[in-house]
Length: 286
Image (cartoon, rainbow, N blue to C red; front, side, top):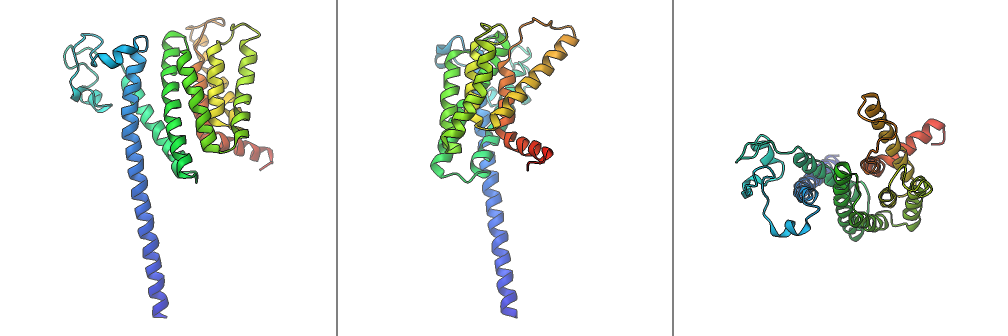
């Protein structure tokens, strides 16, 4: 009897120790992903600001856009420098754009979410997980820059669209490991958008939106692509209604749609299958 109790206690301690080690490893992975996300977001900020002058990214040091003062390294620590400086340039005391901490923090959160989705929620082969994570980072980076570029200039850069498209296909094939899920997701997303763009010659939406829809459709796969489209149009429609009711826009006012496609895509990527399961349960098909 004592031997059985001793064995049970040993087993319990082993399980507890294993769970503790696993928790530590998870926390370490999340921390690394968060820090990397901050750094990645900081770089994306540079791309957003200097997109029309790519060479300056390589040649010129970071500087204040207001007073042009060169920034020391301790003023370039992602997120923390903004907090330490209280959102103002050390030299001229002019306010620093909130774009910087928003992009850095959002990118860090999305990198952590991607790490959790790829490495923790799904039992992928190591090679598939690594390839999926790299492709996810590339697609995420391109989509974040597109988000702000379209928001500021009402234009989707073609180069970034192709980067997002290629990275999304690679991610999908590595993550889902089923070409049909990838193909059907892409088709389900791109066909409705294309039907809104080409017959109307871009009156409602631009050609860049077609490439973004295709990229996101491949990224989220089937059937989450359905959630992507619904979320993008619901959020976009709500935002447009708010603008019109507040008098800031009219029915024919052009509104950048890529940001809504990207937000809808992120919702579909992380919660798409859960939302479909929930909805089918309401209908009694669960």
